[in-house]
Image 1 (cartoon, one colour):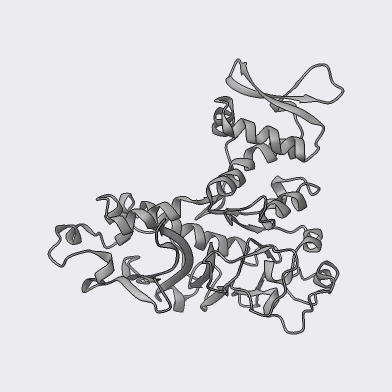
Image 2 (cartoon, rainbow, N blue to C red):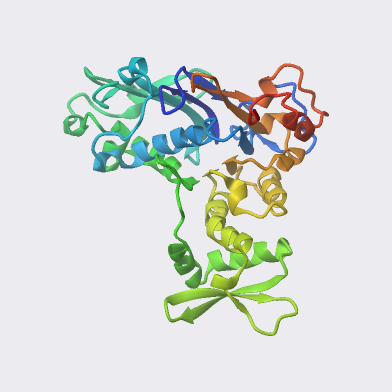
Length: 390
């Protein structure tokens, strides 16, 4: 689960923004919607995180940072210069961009889940890595796995990277140590790589991706657990659909929908936009829920009918339907969803008159009570992060 992210000099974020998702020890949780992924630590994390704010306030920028770090750890060995954009000013164009994330992951079954901290810094002009570091907490004290600067890689004893290991010379100035070492099957790198692969997203460095439904349809057409799961969820959501079937069409495999009261099925192309949107986004939800991981989804309410949104939120909040503590991190505009959220599950983004994004949790806004109407007060502007109407 994502516990913290720090972002500096990245798109609309100029000054360092820290989003710490850990929940105060005295916060009540009658619905048991907060997870304690590292058992016995006493640290709780929300299973659902929703980002609210006006258009172009920086919601997508926060999600971009998450996905950028995932892709850098996974794929930078095969790419050239990192494609990042600093804050648009003469001052920050030459300044470094910095990132950090803290997350928990099971390194091995016998050791259980551990908390990791990954730090990354790029030179402002060359887009070369100026610093990269990975730490973890095997117990109460943080230990360094490695720290890489322009002088080289300083590996801690737990990382098992000898000073004379020839792979050190293969680390490119534009690539992650983890991405390079995972190509040579170094255990720590492989495990971090696996953690990053468990992040499912419709976001790219350019923003929300336009998802091609053809690969999704091909996935369902194979039958098996994906199609079975889709059928199960669609019946639970009571959309009037009794079954989703794989069919042969002139364009290849497709889907048809059997509706209550209709004698003939409806082809996927003629289904409602809400149903088609749910089918396309469903694998991004099903993956984390069944395997563990994180779904990072931009403009979630644009893809899902408003009546379905609370049901999906509840599925992630409820430990019975989410026993692996999958995490759902979304941006949206649908304020009615606030009626189904607590203040710990809401993050706000706001841009000032100089175009700088500020990121803050609703739980950190002074005076927000647990029993107050978040929906009504947000629309009235009590928390900020709402569109300004001239």
